Image (cartoon, rainbow over all chains, first blue to last red; front, side, top):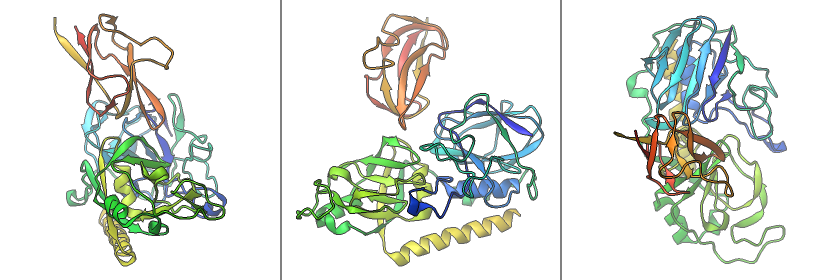
Length: 323
Length: 80
């Protein structure tokens, strides 16, 4: 039972919940950038949470299934077709042996996910099937898919069934200006008060440098408080003595073009971290594309924890409704 | 005679040529067949070839070299 890749799209990778526990030795977690779309996809096709799925970006792949199975397409708003017939998103669909899944032009969002009953069966690497393409590990041969690849499908689907559908009120919308919550901190004191306010007042535009490692934005210039260069720090005013970068953290090299780190994050370095995007809001960033806008809405720690609790509660509710 | 516009399938930066020193893929007045490459869009440090989805003669470039483009944006106009 396999999936044959007829066309890989722009960059389609195998992802799961990620490779947790190795950050301290320089291993980012990888895993699905839009974890909500990924988890709902697995629930729709009757997989256990954590089964591996496919994540595409901008251009969907063209995939042929060699056996009858059940799939679900979630995430970005993109026309998806089985043998040329458009299929609903956020709903499990039966496909027959020889059927071909293909995609049209993205309407909104950036990343479609394809969940398959049984999950994508690639070897576990350090506890995860997620692809980390920068160093070529995990996933399918450590890389994005190519035409001609054959992906094995796992056989341990709990309860594959077509016609499971996410309640429309739970389907995320992808506005062209995304709002994400930002917990200000670590080195926010390095920015002038004006600049910190400017950061949260600005609509930042996503540049073409926006991938699984991080998103780079343009929109304003930020100034740092003058200081004496500390021991171990670089000479740029944005430099601090090296530290670990949280996933979701924001650095502003040179005071221009802030970077938000995502699941394939650089794990540490010497740029001041002015805040961290709340983990569940990274899903929203993952569904913005080059040219879209993002606003960072400050939140305190209690507020950040609440945002996360709400999301986890929503996922639990959705999982039990679909089971 | 009609006209046809080739659109971008990804957001990114449009390039007329395969590399800075190379000749452009096509110039105004050139005839292209369906499937011919007419430019590149760079996004996420990968280059995606823009293919003609119709045959015709290039009548205009609707974006400049190195312009940022969005999904669905018109890139090249063909006389068909």
